[in-house]
Amino acid sequence: MKQPSSGTRLLQGAFILGLAAIISKIIGAFQKIPLQNLGGDGVFGIYNTVYPLYMLIITLAAAGLPLAVSKFVAEQNALGRPDESRRIIRLSSMLLGGLGMVTAILMYVSAPWVAALIGNQHVIPSIHAASLALLCVPLMTGLRGYFQGMQQMVPTAVSQVVEQTVRVTVMIVVLLWLIGQDASLEMIAAGAMLGSVAGGCAGLVVMLGFVYRHRRQERADHWSEEGALFRNLEHSQDMSQTTQTSDVSRDSGSRHMAITGEDINKVIPVEGVQARKTKRTNAEWIRTLLIYAVPVCLGSLAVPLMNLVDTFTVPRLLSGEGLDEVQTMVSFGIYNRGLPLVQLVTMLATSLSVLFIPAMAEARLKGGPEAVRQQAGMALRWFWLIGLAASAGLAVLADPINRMLYGDAAGTEALRYMALTAAGSTVSIIAAALLQGLGAVRAPAFSMLAAAGVKVLLNVMLVPALGISGAAIAGAAAYMLAAGLNVALLARLTAMRPAPGAVLAKPALVIAAMSLAALGMAWAAEVILGGLGIAATQRLAAMGMSLLGMAAGGAVFVLTAARIGLLTATELAALPKLGPRLAKLLRRLRVLR
Image 1 (cartoon, one colour):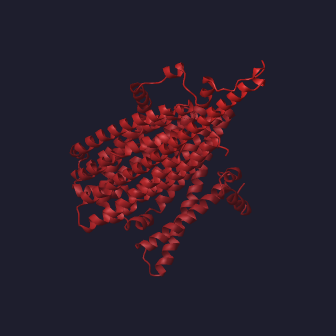
Image 2 (cartoon, helix red, strand yellow; image 1 turned 180 degrees about the vertical axis):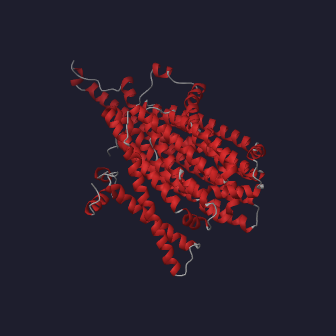
Image 3 (cartoon, helix red, strand yellow; image 1 turned 120 degrees about the horizontal axis):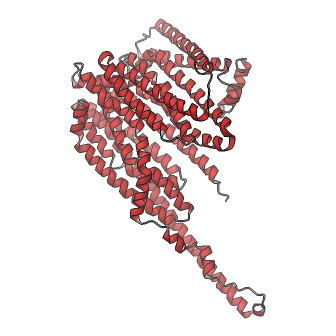
């Protein structure tokens, strides 16, 4: 059977991981909606206070080493040293298991101190629950890195989906049970956090199953190779005896067919003296893994730190305005209502951003500066439009969307302001991927760190005056700063000079038309449903207004963007499956140039 090429395996792996990432992130984003619906805003607030802290600890414990494992396993396999690959995963598993245990103990023991920093004692049980996940998750990520190093993406994809599915299922079951037991808010939130523990354990079990299966296959392949070698040796000996008894073997031109030591090495490659010298000791491997992992880990901390800013500032600032601890958590939960919606947009950007890193590298090597500028310009223009459309659509439909998902209109103003973070975060993510494709791997992390600093300052300035709306405004401004810094550096590196009309004027026209269409359709739906006796405050009416408004806004967005040339026929045709059909339809409507 013909084996797929390395490029084909890479594309297959990218597709598998991309699909799994999208599925798992959709599950993860929407799990917060039933959490709020079942537990209420108080539970939602506690959960969203602790979860960023948990993600920061996970990043510290498991961000860099799995990538290091993936890199060095791939290298050792390429050198024909599977035994070294197995040694790497053994050492890294010991490191990650030990690191997970240490961080779990530290997180559990320091829960009262962290709660004092946050200014709310109700988070302690959730911190205790979240710490248990650290016993499983780091080790699971290391095993994922091992299989990725062997270009086997299915184990990672399966474990991601299983982890998220189990996490959400356990969370909902525990929530329903605790609510039925009339448990306190902090205990219900801690029960919800146990979903992360169950998900991490389930993901680890899946990865251990793949490890067991892989080891069995390795042993079967080993015995198959041993049998083939034995048969080759017997065949060579038979041929040797035959040639020795034949008259032809006494001729000077005859060849001796007995297998030699050199021939055996061709059947089973044996490392020579020089290769043995290059082998690292266990201590050297640990040092090599850590040297590679620590900078990667530090670079990965930027985004969790950005999310953690609200955890350590907003509850304390709200309590300073006279709210007690329960009221603070309720208000913080209302503030986080828009987070799952914004995450859906950033999820799309994050999932697609991995495609631009190799694309930019290839454009730089093959196409030169002009190809780089075209690639960067097209990516920024598309995701600037997507981010703006998401921000505007969520902002103008904030009231019905809030009622549809959460049952009331509490925090609608804050949701509108939080919607504006979609534009900045989307552009920031794509610009960061483009910079990484050009080799500027550290710049995006510094941009996010600067944005986190600005978020702290703006929270301190705005939350006392505006409450949770001030925190939402601070987030939108901070992400826009990160986007601006990344785009400015990208423009300098690629010598891009975007026209103001294409960046501001035309997008403003498209977004205005889209917003009017969404508002008009939502108003018409409200009137029609009201005539049928369904009040706008009911969830059914809110669902109709939201979905019809989004459909109308999306249609007008595509039509207007195509009409004024922000979307071209070539770009639409490049989209898989839907793109060519959409381009054909728009040509028939005479709106596509």
